Length: 350
Image (cartoon, rainbow, N blue to C red; front, top):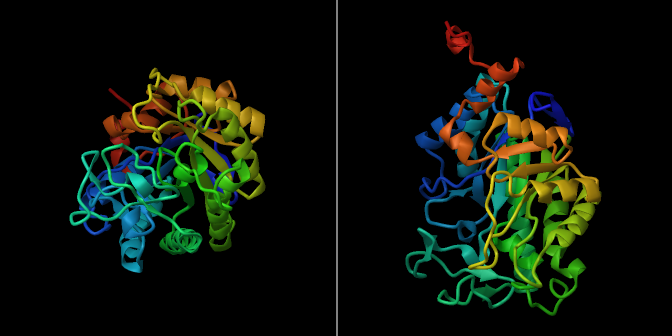
C-alpha cells in the first residue's frame, strides 16, 4: 500500500510517504537559502511522495524564532518558488507548505523566550503564557483575529502562486490556532471562546478563507494535536468532532499529531505512539488522516496503512537521517519508486 498512489483533489501522490514539516531554524528575515534548496531537493531525489516545507510564519510574529521561515511577503514566496520548481522538474514528488502562527510560543531562541527588543510581543487568545516565567501575551481583539485570518489567506495566495501542491494549516503543538482550540489556553467569553463551536471558530474561518484562494490543483491539509495529555484539555473526542467539521469545510486530510500546548505534561513515547490517534480520527470521523510519530521503518509504515489506521505516513526524524528511505524501501519491497536517472547505476547492487 505504501507505494500505491493516492489523490487529493487533482493532486496525485505517487506513494504514501510524506516528509513531515520540521523547523530548520536557518532562515534570515524569513527567507529560504541554499541550505533549504539542498535540504528539500534531496528528499525529492529520494522518492518521497510528498514533501512539506517547515512551519512558515504568516506574519513576522508568527515565527517561533528569528530564524524561522516566512511567507508574509511576495519576495519570500518567490524564493520558495525556486525550491518548488526544482522539485517539480527533477522528481515525481509533490511539495506542500505548512502555514503557521506561533502565538504565545513565539519570540524564542533554543526554547527560551527572548526579550521584546530581541524578539517581539507575543499574541494569544487569552492572557496565559506557555510557561509561568514568560511574558503575558497580548490578547487578540476580535478585529485582530480577523486580521490573522487575512494573514493566513494572503499567505495561501502567495503559496498557490509559488506553485505548491498542498497547503497544510498548523493547528497543533500549542501554536496560535491550537491555543484557541484548547479550553486550557482559551478562556475568552466572546464568540471565540467558551463552547467547542466558539473555540474552533478561528480555525474554521481560516479554512474557509484559504479555500477561497485554492483550486482543484491545490489540496488542503490540517495538522492537529489529537490530544494535549492534560486533564480537562483538548482530547481525542474533540479531535474527532473537529475533524467531522473540517471534512464538511473541504479539508482533504487531517494530519494527527499530539501535545505541545501544555507545559510539563508527560507524553508516552514509543514507535508509532500517535498512530492510535490517527486511527480513531480516521474511523470515527470518516476522514483521510496522516499518521506521524516515531515511525522509523518501511514495514511498520506498510502495516499502519494495511490496518486502516491512516492514509499517509508522515516521517520526521527518520527522513532527516535517511533522505532515500522511500526508494530504499521500494528496493526491499520490489515496488516502483522514483529514482534519479543520474543514479541508475546504483539501483541494482553488484
